[in-house]
Image (cartoon, rainbow, N blue to C red; front, side, top):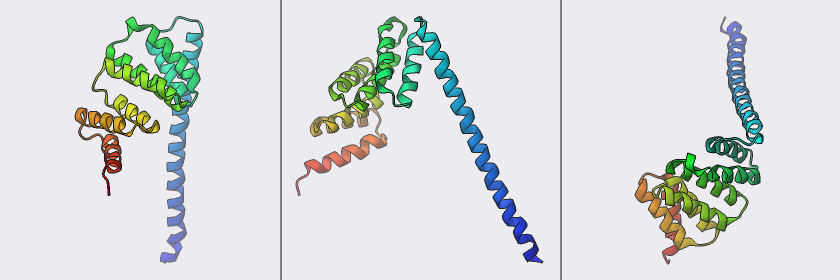
Length: 176
């Protein structure tokens, strides 16, 4: 008797798994379409030349997601040129994103300049501190990297990235 229900049980599990997979796939398709629609609308509007700083930032961020760093940097620079529209917190976001675009292109000195500009706007901006420390690490500036991670930890003591990286860097300074 139990043997008769075994195929139905397995088939039910298979149908449930396929249904779950179809749901997540459908959700991802909808999300991707929404992003691409936003991308297309922003591109069209900004080609006409009259965009806001926020729109330039949003399109620049979408280019960053697509790993098109040169185009992202150009758009983020345009966002910064419309300074009077940006609050200091938002300016810091743009500088940080621009720093990331330069970092991804291995233009570390330009990235450092942008991260420092972000920190000038918002001194305890933890993401910019982490990013700046990361660039220092890439440039083999271990002491500056550690110092910057410690600043991030002062601003946000539970920052996992800064904790992990600072601990790793401290081990380099401890002699065996």
